[in-house]
Amino acid sequence: MRTLLANSCLKMLNYESEENADFENFKVKEPALFTNDHFAGKIIFADAQLFELIIIHPRNEIDLDLTQAHIEQVFSIQNATLSSLRAPSLIVSGDATFENVVPAGRVYLGHSHFQDLTIGDFDEWLKAAARPLPAHSLDRCSVDLEGLSFEDVTIPNTEVKPQAKRLLELIKGSQCPFSPQPYMELEKFLSAHGYPQEADEVFIAMHESERKQLDPWKRPFDCVLDVIVGYGRKTWRAVIGAIALIILGTFLFRASYMEPEDKSTDLWYNPFWYSLDLFSPIDLGMAKKWRPTKLYPEVRGYGQVHRLLGWILIPLIVAAITGIIK
Image (cartoon, rainbow, N blue to C red; front, side):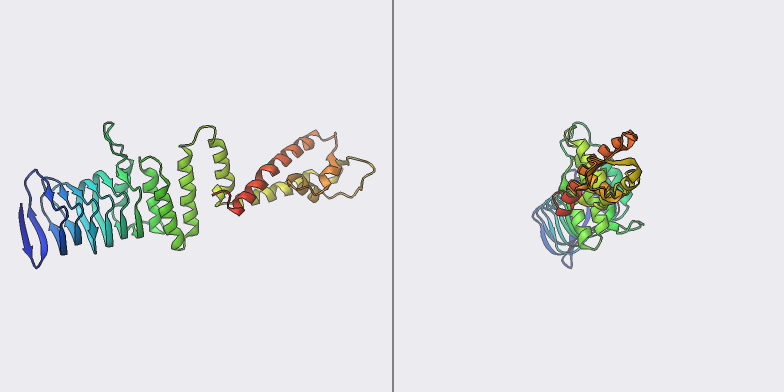
């Protein structure tokens, strides 16, 4: 290894040994810059405290270990292919940029924190996340974001707004075992930055992914929650459905199709109130006094369906509004 210290700036010129370039516990208060360098072995900055770390156009694939490293300002990798990036508990207090970076191997950013994360060539990261690991591998997946947190995310050259929403593609496309944490972190970010609708989409996507882990007998009810109320984030679906069914009942339960349960009862009848009463779990009185005549069995049959749908939709609406479903 040949190392040049100039103006307190670390510059690596060449490293041909197959052994690791080991900078574990390394501390430097000036930029560590590596440009057009060759690394035959792994580059280790585990537990290092760096001011800046910049790697530009290495001449071969790099295997980088940043376990529990702390970078105060800039962390930048440009025009590089990563055979491996291991960065659990990495903290970058400034800008972190991956520009023209191809993850050819595993990327582990578990429990790392970035102040401002920029990921260029995002499609390459999506390909890496979808790539299954060899059967003998002990790793969880190719791109592991479990525990990752950030203050801001930029994904250049994308039409998706906000750009951070594209992280959902990376999370969903990962071969990692399901974990709610990456979804919740992205949802929190979108909500805090004024994108409630996009945050809701991430929340729903989290539950849809979780459904695959449920016991088969639990999945149908989970699908109902998804379709009808969007796990409490799309309650308007159930409200619109309920209103539509009540209006439908108003037309079906017209006076000419009805008869009183007791001839001596008050003969006042209103199809809207009957439809609402039959649909609602709360007794409004009219559904007990009237019924469809035997001349219209199909209306009688629909009346049972109408009641059943009300007993499903109304409790779901109430549970979603009160926050029971979440």
